[in-house]
Image (tube, rainbow, N blue to C red):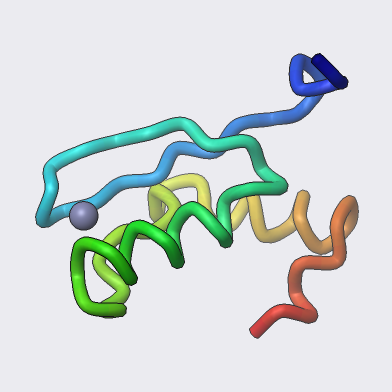
Length: 70
Ligand SMILES: [Zn+2]
């Protein structure tokens, strides 16, 4: 399809579902919100793997400006 191959993926972990998924960086926020909304009544259970969330925050801030979306 498009340029998905270029896009970094981010591991998302959910401690309640005991799942890990790799999500394209641009879709992470939506994927987490959707998962938590559907499966956990909007509670923030699923999240970016804490081990890399700092690195992702740097990438996101530089590449995508995600820091705007608090
Ligand atoms: Zn879950």
